[in-house]
Amino acid sequence: MTRDREKQLAAEAAAALVEDGMVVGLGTGSTAAFALRKLGERIRGGLKIQGVPSSRWAENMARELGIPLTDFSRTTRIDMTLDGADEVDPGLNLIKGGGGALFREKIVAAASTRLVIFADGSKRVPTLGKFPLPVEVNPFGWQVAARKLGDLGAPVTLRQAGGQPFLSDNQGYILDCAFGAIPDPPELEARIRRITGVMECGLFCGLAHTVLLAEGETVHTLRR
Ligand code: 5RP
Image: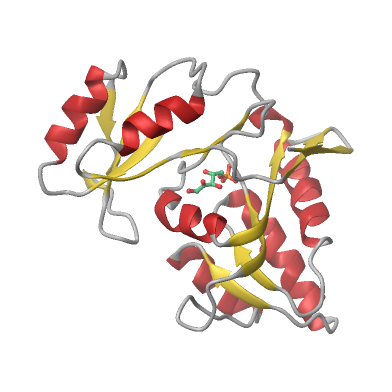
Protein backbone atom coordinates (compact mmCIF):
# COMPACT_ATOMS: atom_id res chain seq x y z
CA MET A 1 0.00 0.00 0.00
CA THR A 2 1.60 3.25 -1.08
CA ARG A 3 1.05 6.56 0.63
CA ASP A 4 -0.44 7.91 -2.60
CA ARG A 5 -3.04 5.16 -2.60
CA GLU A 6 -4.02 6.11 0.97
CA LYS A 7 -4.22 9.78 -0.03
CA GLN A 8 -6.47 8.86 -2.92
CA LEU A 9 -8.77 6.67 -0.81
CA ALA A 10 -9.20 9.32 1.89
CA ALA A 11 -9.66 12.17 -0.60
CA GLU A 12 -12.19 10.30 -2.70
CA ALA A 13 -14.18 9.37 0.42
CA ALA A 14 -14.32 13.09 1.21
CA ALA A 15 -15.35 14.04 -2.33
CA ALA A 16 -18.21 11.53 -2.04
CA LEU A 17 -19.71 13.63 0.80
CA VAL A 18 -20.33 16.61 -1.49
CA GLU A 19 -23.97 17.11 -2.51
CA ASP A 20 -25.76 18.95 -5.28
CA GLY A 21 -26.07 22.68 -4.77
CA MET A 22 -23.21 23.01 -2.28
CA VAL A 23 -20.61 25.75 -2.15
CA VAL A 24 -17.40 23.78 -1.62
CA GLY A 25 -14.05 25.02 -0.30
CA LEU A 26 -11.25 23.56 -2.41
CA GLY A 27 -8.12 22.60 -0.48
CA THR A 28 -4.49 22.68 -1.53
CA GLY A 29 -1.82 19.99 -1.78
CA SER A 30 -1.07 16.58 -3.20
CA THR A 31 -3.92 14.92 -1.25
CA ALA A 32 -6.40 17.67 -2.14
CA ALA A 33 -5.49 17.07 -5.80
CA PHE A 34 -7.16 13.64 -5.59
CA ALA A 35 -10.33 15.22 -4.16
CA LEU A 36 -10.40 17.90 -6.86
CA ARG A 37 -10.00 15.28 -9.60
CA LYS A 38 -12.87 13.27 -8.12
CA LEU A 39 -15.04 16.38 -7.91
CA GLY A 40 -14.24 17.13 -11.57
CA GLU A 41 -15.33 13.61 -12.46
CA ARG A 42 -18.57 13.96 -10.47
CA ILE A 43 -19.27 17.33 -12.14
CA ARG A 44 -18.89 15.71 -15.55
CA GLY A 45 -21.46 13.18 -14.30
CA GLY A 46 -23.95 15.95 -13.45
CA LEU A 47 -23.06 17.19 -9.93
CA LYS A 48 -23.80 20.91 -9.57
CA ILE A 49 -21.55 22.78 -7.14
CA GLN A 50 -19.52 25.95 -6.91
CA GLY A 51 -15.97 25.91 -5.55
CA VAL A 52 -14.05 28.47 -3.50
CA PRO A 53 -10.32 27.83 -4.01
CA SER A 54 -7.93 28.09 -1.06
CA SER A 55 -4.95 29.02 -3.26
CA ARG A 56 -3.95 30.03 -6.77
CA TRP A 57 -2.86 26.42 -7.23
CA ALA A 58 -6.37 25.16 -6.34
CA GLU A 59 -7.94 27.81 -8.58
CA ASN A 60 -5.84 26.75 -11.57
CA MET A 61 -6.48 23.09 -10.98
CA ALA A 62 -10.24 23.66 -10.58
CA ARG A 63 -10.34 25.58 -13.86
CA GLU A 64 -8.52 22.77 -15.65
CA LEU A 65 -10.97 20.25 -14.21
CA GLY A 66 -14.06 22.30 -15.10
CA ILE A 67 -15.10 22.97 -11.49
CA PRO A 68 -17.28 26.14 -11.49
CA LEU A 69 -15.86 28.77 -9.14
CA THR A 70 -17.23 31.50 -6.95
CA ASP A 71 -15.59 33.80 -4.38
CA PHE A 72 -16.18 35.75 -1.18
CA SER A 73 -17.57 38.76 -3.08
CA ARG A 74 -20.55 36.53 -3.96
CA THR A 75 -20.86 34.38 -0.84
CA THR A 76 -19.34 34.37 2.62
CA ARG A 77 -20.72 30.93 3.50
CA ILE A 78 -19.21 27.66 2.40
CA ASP A 79 -21.19 24.46 2.99
CA MET A 80 -18.26 22.06 3.05
CA THR A 81 -14.51 22.42 2.64
CA LEU A 82 -12.31 19.53 1.58
CA ASP A 83 -8.65 19.89 2.52
CA GLY A 84 -5.54 17.95 3.49
CA ALA A 85 -3.27 18.40 6.51
CA ASP A 86 0.33 17.88 7.59
CA GLU A 87 -0.57 16.46 11.01
CA VAL A 88 -3.78 15.49 12.83
CA ASP A 89 -3.98 14.85 16.60
CA PRO A 90 -6.66 12.88 18.48
CA GLY A 91 -8.59 16.12 19.23
CA LEU A 92 -8.67 16.87 15.47
CA ASN A 93 -6.29 19.78 15.90
CA LEU A 94 -4.19 20.17 12.77
CA ILE A 95 -0.92 21.47 11.46
CA LYS A 96 -1.36 22.88 7.96
CA GLY A 97 0.71 25.03 5.66
CA GLY A 98 3.28 22.60 4.31
CA GLY A 99 2.30 23.92 0.88
CA GLY A 100 2.35 27.53 2.10
CA ALA A 101 -1.39 28.12 1.62
CA LEU A 102 -2.33 28.30 5.32
CA PHE A 103 -3.64 31.88 5.30
CA ARG A 104 -6.25 31.35 2.61
CA GLU A 105 -6.93 27.81 3.81
CA LYS A 106 -7.80 29.14 7.26
CA ILE A 107 -10.15 31.82 5.88
CA VAL A 108 -11.89 29.20 3.75
CA ALA A 109 -12.06 26.83 6.74
CA ALA A 110 -13.45 29.55 9.01
CA ALA A 111 -16.22 30.31 6.48
CA SER A 112 -17.23 26.63 6.31
CA THR A 113 -20.17 24.95 7.98
CA ARG A 114 -18.22 21.69 7.72
CA LEU A 115 -14.46 21.27 7.33
CA VAL A 116 -13.63 17.76 6.12
CA ILE A 117 -9.92 16.90 6.35
CA PHE A 118 -8.48 13.82 4.67
CA ALA A 119 -5.03 12.31 4.85
CA ASP A 120 -2.90 9.21 4.57
CA GLY A 121 -2.15 7.36 7.81
CA SER A 122 1.29 8.95 8.26
CA LYS A 123 -0.40 12.24 9.22
CA ARG A 124 -2.02 10.83 12.35
CA VAL A 125 0.08 11.74 15.43
CA PRO A 126 -0.50 11.48 19.18
CA THR A 127 0.83 15.03 19.68
CA LEU A 128 1.31 17.77 17.06
CA GLY A 129 4.74 19.20 16.40
CA LYS A 130 7.03 16.77 14.64
CA PHE A 131 6.19 18.65 11.43
CA PRO A 132 7.70 22.17 11.76
CA LEU A 133 4.84 24.62 12.30
CA PRO A 134 4.42 27.05 9.37
CA VAL A 135 3.67 30.64 10.40
CA GLU A 136 2.94 33.29 7.77
CA VAL A 137 4.39 36.74 8.48
CA ASN A 138 4.50 40.10 6.79
CA PRO A 139 7.84 40.50 4.97
CA PHE A 140 8.40 43.93 6.58
CA GLY A 141 10.32 43.32 9.80
CA TRP A 142 9.86 39.57 9.56
CA GLN A 143 13.03 39.22 11.63
CA VAL A 144 11.19 40.69 14.64
CA ALA A 145 8.40 38.13 14.41
CA ALA A 146 11.05 35.43 13.91
CA ARG A 147 12.83 36.47 17.12
CA LYS A 148 9.56 36.42 19.08
CA LEU A 149 8.67 33.00 17.70
CA GLY A 150 12.14 31.88 18.73
CA ASP A 151 11.43 33.24 22.25
CA LEU A 152 8.43 30.86 22.38
CA GLY A 153 10.89 27.99 22.04
CA ALA A 154 11.21 27.16 18.36
CA PRO A 155 14.23 27.19 16.07
CA VAL A 156 12.87 29.26 13.16
CA THR A 157 13.71 28.90 9.46
CA LEU A 158 12.65 31.33 6.73
CA ARG A 159 11.21 29.14 3.96
CA GLN A 160 13.08 29.43 0.67
CA ALA A 161 12.15 28.74 -2.94
CA GLY A 162 14.75 28.93 -5.70
CA GLY A 163 17.26 30.76 -3.51
CA GLN A 164 14.72 33.46 -2.52
CA PRO A 165 12.28 33.69 0.38
CA PHE A 166 9.15 31.71 -0.52
CA LEU A 167 6.26 34.13 -1.17
CA SER A 168 2.71 33.02 -0.37
CA ASP A 169 -0.33 33.91 -2.51
CA ASN A 170 -0.73 36.91 -0.14
CA GLN A 171 2.89 37.97 -0.58
CA GLY A 172 3.72 36.75 2.94
CA TYR A 173 6.84 34.93 4.11
CA ILE A 174 6.61 31.54 5.80
CA LEU A 175 8.59 30.83 8.96
CA ASP A 176 8.89 27.11 9.72
CA CYS A 177 9.02 26.78 13.50
CA ALA A 178 10.40 23.54 14.92
CA PHE A 179 8.60 23.56 18.28
CA GLY A 180 8.76 19.82 18.75
CA ALA A 181 5.84 18.40 20.76
CA ILE A 182 2.98 20.91 21.12
CA PRO A 183 1.03 19.75 24.21
CA ASP A 184 -1.56 22.58 24.10
CA PRO A 185 -2.19 23.63 20.46
CA PRO A 186 -4.94 26.24 21.15
CA GLU A 187 -2.76 27.98 23.74
CA LEU A 188 0.24 28.11 21.38
CA GLU A 189 -1.96 29.28 18.51
CA ALA A 190 -3.26 32.16 20.67
CA ARG A 191 0.28 33.16 21.71
CA ILE A 192 1.56 33.10 18.12
CA ARG A 193 -1.35 35.14 16.82
CA ARG A 194 -0.59 37.87 19.38
CA ILE A 195 2.84 38.50 17.77
CA THR A 196 2.77 41.65 15.64
CA GLY A 197 3.59 40.85 12.03
CA VAL A 198 2.11 37.35 12.18
CA MET A 199 -0.52 37.04 9.47
CA GLU A 200 -1.63 33.49 10.27
CA CYS A 201 -0.49 30.38 12.09
CA GLY A 202 -0.60 26.84 10.72
CA LEU A 203 -2.31 25.47 13.83
CA PHE A 204 -5.98 24.79 13.01
CA CYS A 205 -7.70 24.18 16.36
CA GLY A 206 -11.39 23.40 16.72
CA LEU A 207 -12.00 23.85 12.99
CA ALA A 208 -12.11 20.31 11.56
CA HIS A 209 -15.48 18.59 11.94
CA THR A 210 -14.49 15.32 10.31
CA VAL A 211 -11.15 13.72 9.49
CA LEU A 212 -10.96 10.85 7.01
CA LEU A 213 -7.72 8.94 7.55
CA ALA A 214 -6.73 6.09 5.27
CA GLU A 215 -4.68 3.30 6.79
CA GLY A 216 -4.15 0.56 4.26
CA GLU A 217 -7.45 0.02 2.44
CA THR A 218 -9.50 1.27 5.42
CA VAL A 219 -10.70 4.85 5.67
CA HIS A 220 -11.34 5.77 9.32
CA THR A 221 -13.80 8.55 10.08
CA LEU A 222 -12.84 10.68 13.10
CA ARG A 223 -15.36 13.21 14.36
CA ARG A 224 -15.03 16.06 16.80
C1 5RP B 1 -1.04 23.34 2.16
C2 5RP B 1 -1.55 22.38 3.17
C3 5RP B 1 -1.70 20.97 2.76
O1 5RP B 1 -3.02 20.56 2.98
C4 5RP B 1 -0.78 20.12 3.57
O2 5RP B 1 0.54 20.63 3.42
C5 5RP B 1 -0.80 18.65 3.13
O3 5RP B 1 -0.24 18.54 1.86
P1 5RP B 1 -0.13 17.15 1.12
O4 5RP B 1 -1.52 16.67 0.88
O5 5RP B 1 0.61 17.47 -0.15
O6 5RP B 1 0.64 16.23 2.03
O7 5RP B 1 -1.82 22.71 4.30
O8 5RP B 1 -0.80 24.60 2.71
